[in-house]
Length: 113
Length: 115
Image: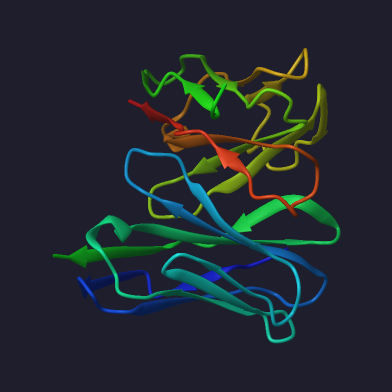
């Protein structure tokens, strides 16, 4: 059974600040790591899917890294904007059930103007 | 359609009532998933369909929960004799292929409140 942990639980930053969150997951039998952004009253939106150790992905001001050997991923947001305010979820899957995402509880980000 | 559509958006049910939640996935998406998100927690896996076949229902919390996808497109999650602990957001997601190399496309969810 996978256990995915995210920290911090919530984060308040000022517009323009850069920030990062952590996702930890069991490293054995690892298959893939997903990041989603979930804005209130909307659908969770896929940000990244990462599978390889050392992977780094970038989408605008948001980037993510993956360490499968030690079982963690970081999500970075450079120059936070109020529209970045959302809950950021990570989810992991393993080779036994590669389709089954096990989610963390999320990091709730609030960016103050 | 352009995205995954779920209905109703909100549902209030009296304890003991049966409910049915609908999911319209993206056309052509083979894989369909249901997740349950309780307050303050991350989404939890309920069940997985590949076309019309339900390949994994290990996450369904009890035999009161039943999901179907008879023609391999629209799916319905049914909850019989609802209980207060069933109150949650129910998310549906679809994906082009099985396996998790693709990000899933989620619907906006159905918020179920059992009173």
